[in-house]
Length: 186
Image (cartoon, rainbow, N blue to C red; front, side, top):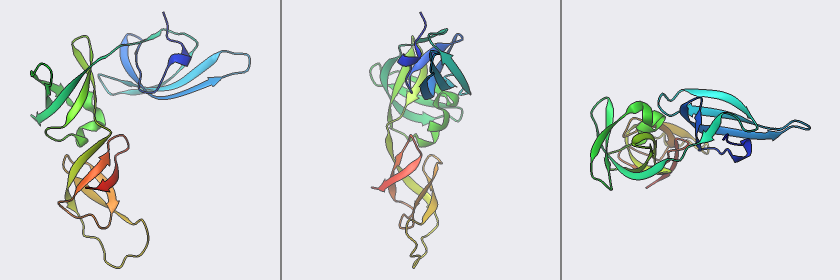
């Protein structure tokens, strides 16, 4: 049975053409006499590859139930990120392509949610906000009176974010993992 376009939602995982995809963008529209359509942007859960597709009515796709489990990030061995299942206490490597662009926000000890299709980990969801230490930034220029002036700061994990001038090396910042933007200094 196909998934109706009205049932689709951003963040939902679907089975499309035999592969698992996450809906990263979704726009529903109803045409005059025609049926409803959904313009979507899909991200392949294994490769991270994105594609745009349009669904009309109920097509050859279905929603996939993913089991969630709490995980904790332990360390990186260069190619993989090693996590521990907080319920079973077993450790396992996760290839960096499963994490996608989120990898730069991961620090040791971070608790995340792992989503499984059967026994296969297909998606890792970070908390909305993480606290990261500033490892490099240029000093702010005194007397700069223009409001909202920002400078780049490199945080642990390698992510670079724009921050206010008063932020200095060693500060701990709260960063939104969904947008990659600075929220506040801790």
